[in-house]
Image (cartoon, rainbow, N blue to C red; front, side, top):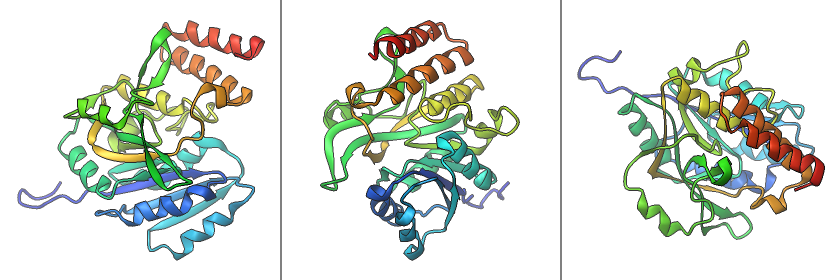
Length: 283
């Protein structure tokens, strides 16, 4: 513990799992380099990119980067590999390669987390971003994750104009967070480790694994918070169910049912029904 008049300097690591992320990687690095408060360590886990040449851009960066190359292990395993290398730091930021931070993100997020000891995970206002024009769009990507119609788990405010962010004037509690950009407190992360030493459930190759993590954090007594003063931008690989492949829709529906069952939610039935619809009728 610091002395009474001593200012504590919290530490923070970044974990990013990449897979053929060349389109986004330069912008990803540029946004991190522009931070008013740099992270202490950045772990990039490449999950078997067939074209990994984009990772060479990291060699010219002054950031404290470490790259781990693996086969296609998926999002959960990749994040766990990275997290085990930074778990001794006070905070960890889960950051997608297609998500870019506002320059004051770390400065603001760390200050907030330090003064809010009950918060386990915090997520920013995410705005949709067009990587081809290198410009933000007039569309919200996420302000947290909530239950939508028919019990579906959805990104809150997704697709609304950016002016809709004005409704949020203070940090607000959400059921779950989007791990495209989410900062976790070390004590909260350690409190929900399962299956030996898994932070993310490795039976979920990708999709819904962040919802499951945030669910366990909430069940352990911590808060999941959307902070409107924190800003980020997200390209998002798909914009609607119609643009998702059948394989992706099956995986999402299966994982939806699984996390509802795992976390003892009655909405498990809806998840199973959705999975059957995709399996049998390709809906």
